[in-house]
Length: 106
Image (cartoon, rainbow, N blue to C red; front, top):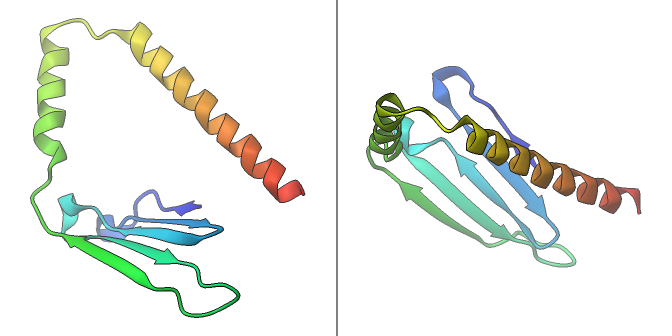
């Protein structure tokens, strides 16, 4: 899996490769058109068919982020649940990494 953090002009990409195909995200709609491409692997070889979807819309995250921020300003943030969530995500990502390492070791 390859994912960029953020580059010049806010371009974002994510490429996920698997045994049966790949998935690709190019940019995020908050910065312009966003594309999702799914390619299905052809065995033993051949050009993979692909499905592409392009989304053009205003940033859908802004209003949700703003409402969340206002809620935090109105009350005390629950840092215990935020920490629990971070620990859960860390555990899941660690398990995925161990699984990927096990697959490459065989």
